[in-house]
Image 1 (cartoon, helix red, strand yellow):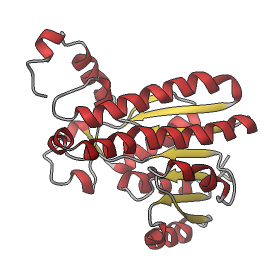
Image 2 (tube, one colour):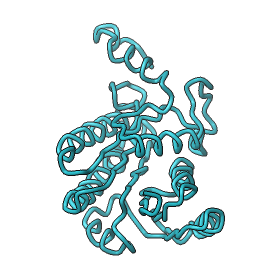
Image 3 (cartoon, helix red, strand yellow):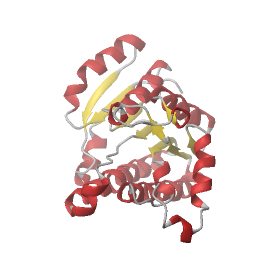
Length: 245
């Protein structure tokens, strides 16, 4: 398994790079895909030298859905594992006031990730093997006033991954849904996040690799989130609609 290539979609984020490092450390060739991928040259060189594996860079725009087939055709080899870490939160107030801003959030977190994995799914199914990993969010488990545009897109992505897993289970393709909760990254460094609920990017990477190798389907990076979201999902609607959480 360690010679099988891993594709990281949305490879610029702290979380995505941590996942790339984790698989490279295990001996996998890595394909880093992101917009303006040439700016990841330093990360590519570091990874290749540190782990002695092939690391390649590939331009990828999750909103350019008509380019997906050509993008996959241009990879040096069809990967055995594909991890979609594409995402964009935006600002809820801006999303409420600006439909274009809301559209970008919806497309970045649902349309683009779902369609690139759909394209890969067809190719993996034709081959009869492979693993697809989608980084979704606990925000998709119940719509909340503070981030419902982002949360609704992640809810759609979670449902898509569930359906894809159901479809591909008999075709030799494994689908993993990852629900990280809070993660300490550059995007969240200005936020006051609760320590017990906040994972490090390396924790996410370890959890993803364990899920891939262990055949897991849906994972919470920190198990406490499973309890937290169970409570939130079961708050009666009459009470929930009066809350601001």
